[in-house]
Length: 161
Image (cartoon, rainbow, N blue to C red; front, top):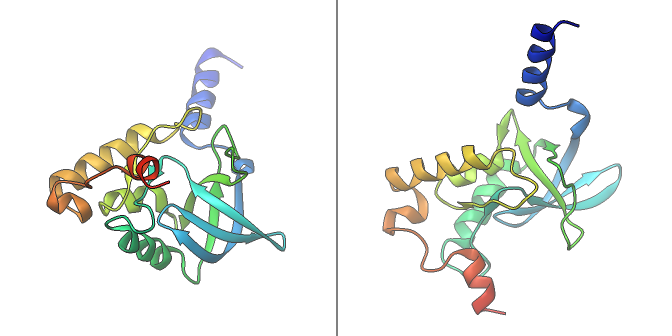
């Protein structure tokens, strides 16, 4: 294989990740804006969205984020696409969640109902999610209408143990 073909192959693998790293599942229920439960192989699996942090239960905008994710997923077959690490320290599956070709992780940030966060090593789409967050902020969507959240979800978790 010449160097030009090798470069083309590397570019394709970068922009079109292997389908082996994807899993088709059935939506079961929403936990909160950035967590849901799906059925895979007859088992229920808790999924945490990669690269986003939505408001916590009892935090401002938490119900709007939860309803947004519910509407996005309800009654649909979902595709989970993985990054480098497939599980977090709580045992949840980490994924980018797609329905009808659209990514939930991106959609909830674009709606101004979640923040883009960088959690290494799963950073494949972080720069893109951050751009979408900046667009939502400028367009004053969701919680950006009033300048953002009083506390980030991470700050909320620390102060409401």
